Amino acid sequence: MSIKQLKLRKLIMNLKHPFTTSFGTIQEKEFFITEAIDVDGNHGFGESVAFSSPWYTEETVATNQHVMEDFLIPILQTNKMNHPDEVSKLFKPIKGNNMAKAALEGAVWDLYAKQKGISLAEALGGDKKQIDVGISIGIQSSVEALIEVISQSVEAGYKRIKLKIKPGWDLEVLQEVRSHFPDTLIMADANSAYTREDIDHLKKLDELHLMMIEQPLAHDDIVDHAKLQAVIHTPICLDESIHSLEDTRKAFELGSCKIINIKIGRVGGLTEAKKIHDFCLEHDIPVWCGGMLESGIGRAHNIALTTLPQFILPGDTAGSANYWEKDIIQPEVIAENGVIHVPDSPGIGYEINKDALDEFTEWVKVFKF
Ligand code: OSB
Ligand code: MG
Image: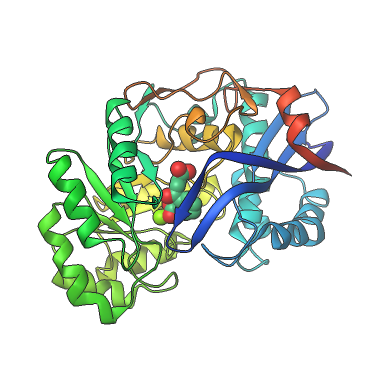
């Protein structure tokens, strides 16, 4: 699958609403769109999901650029491939930097599916025609404001509501929410805001009947999560701690969680994401697809991945309009009653809105192969 050229585009897009987590607020999103072009004029697109600051995990937009330009793109330029699964093998000598790796691998996967004339979902082996999605709601200025946003999301039909929590915005807020929405599927995401000192406090969350609590403890921990899971009924879902199939196996063997959030960027690409999925299918571990406030291109990759069978829980891929005034794909991603119809045209299945892409592009670099 010969690549003739690779384009690296730096974009800046402004979120419709600031998104606040335990680690901070994101308003303006800086990120890369990768584009792999072949001799026949096929174009494959990928997206880097790193943020400007290393608050979620250690990668940033700047480290992504360094690692892609100085290490990963040269590897692609000097090696031939027959299948996108080979990209992660070629990248193996480079440690970590999974979001940088995934951004390039994603463009190769899309290009491959377009060369074969099949959808990315089909190329991955997924066969769902539609996927169920939930929504992730950031920390709000007041409980009243939060209740209002939840009401709108429930009305829009999202299949589950995820609420960001942190010390001081947790038990009482969730109790209030639970009393307004007694039957709604609710989960909480702490983005590593607690420590083992908080275990007694976290035990109190059991009374709220949450679907799960996501990443309560440190971003690099699976040991204390196992201790916490042993004393709470609420299933723990790991996000930040899982970077690979090996991490997944270890977390499973230790009992660190009961559910896995798979993010393509965090695990280094679709090939590794699929391996984690297959392990979870084999061991009966429910998985869902997380989000990183992506543009439509990253969102399309998430949709394709979610067509695999073990994605049995609704993910965070809400509709484009939830994030952006204008997205860079057309049509935009639409979630109707919490359901997204999976496109069946080749590759990611959405056209690029070239005007929007150009409008948000800060600069483009071209790498010849
Ligand atoms: O932990 O899943 C997370 C957003 C930014 C960083 C981390 C996370 C999130 C979300 C929102 O929860 C996901 C989305 O709507 O794309
Ligand atoms: Mg999370």
